[in-house]
Image (cartoon, rainbow, N blue to C red; front, side, top):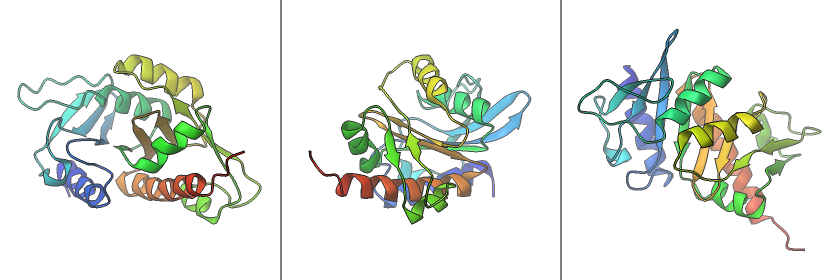
Length: 196
């Protein structure tokens, strides 16, 4: 399957889950490492209706030479995440649970003692996982710097407050599995929250 076809299929899946409403969200896969090049979904199109040609190749800073297809404004953050983490794919969706969790825990969302953590790549017990939360910005350098400042190699996710969540993995399937598990974990955290 071509990178474009794979990205379109994943977008259709996330749209059906309600995580890529309208034209929101963006996904990428790494095409090469030296130099770093990624295929990222184009901007301004309903993500549930993307086809294999609705991707654009970008460099590590999110720039493209394509005169027609426009990458997401967030493409630069995809490049930064791929460069820092070595990920083969980065997914960014607007699922509600991560955004609500960030409202309650703006310093980071702590997860522990939940079986679903194994699907996120961590131990189910005696393993404290803190998902970093950074303030939203329209400047991808600012977001990239905030990501790097809080990045831990064993936490493959970042919540952007009042915006959405980024999750990465070795490939699109790996990133998807991590995202689906993380969304469940964050929904559990929000729904079992006790006001003090």
